[in-house]
Amino acid sequence: MEDSKLIDEFIISLRVEKGLSDNTLQSYRNDLKKLSTAAVDCGKRLLSLERSDLLFVLAQMKRSERSDASIARFVSTIRGFYKYVVSEGFSKQDPTAHLETRKSWQTLPRFLNQEEVDAILAKPDLKTDTGIRDRAMLEVLYATGLRVSELVGLKIKDVDYETGLLICFGKGSKQRCVPIGRSAIYYLKLYLPARRRLLCDGQSEMLFIEEEGGVVTRQKFWKLIKSYGKLANIDYVTPHLLRHSFATALLSNGADLRSVQMMLGHSDIGTTQIYTHVTDDHLKTTYRKFHPRS
Image (cartoon, rainbow, N blue to C red; front, side, top):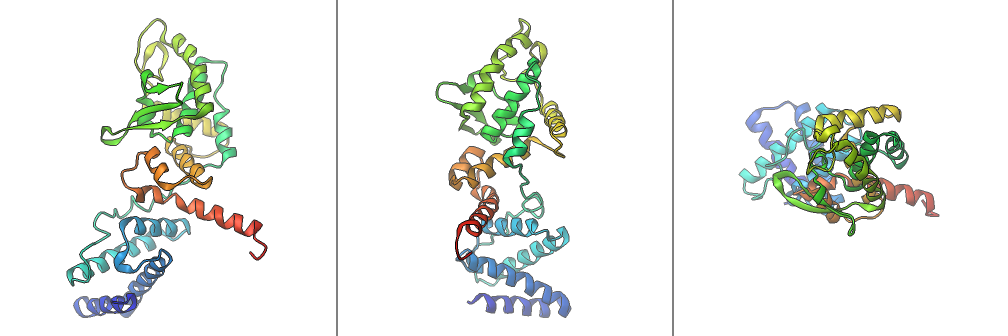
């Protein structure tokens, strides 16, 4: 069945079964027309859309500054639509079945540009042992896109300086291997003597430590990165913001989505797909700048 016909059938069912007003029905129709247009842009039809496609559409809506109420209504509309098409036997799949109402779309990744990242990385005081540690932590975070829990959970044995790789344990204790790059390796090696001084003859298997071997907690690192953000005149910097910036930098420079998914430790590529809006913008900017007929 054509998308327009399917939408008509759904609207009729709402009119008959729920007695909704004409204005409400028109809002439903408008939402579904927008979804149908998005499906065509993806080379698909309404009945072939998947959860990852819906996440991408919601992320684009959030980025275009649609209000939360407007997006919430849109989510409600498509939930009702796919519940209808499944119940009527038009499809066996409901892509909204595991679509979180807010978590999926309300936090479209904000990211830092390279100048902002460099400004934050430059703020720790390298004349102090804790400053060297903080610089190493920031470098590793931006170089790998680790979650803050993964960062503070790193152990000495998890870093291979020869191969330039580290091993971390993500959600569900899933192990993954991530490249760390020259800059992060440089500051990690610079940190190792500082780490020995921080230990004060104590012992710890953890990579990043406080004085006398105490553990750098998630809360402690949140406060640290927030303070360095303020010093760099950047409001509300979080560990996750550097994670977003890591993914954005990779995709903007041509990395494939599957590789970024593996490095971030996402189980669903749809979660990684929301970063592709940056790649789209980068392509558009490049096109406008260089194409003679742009």
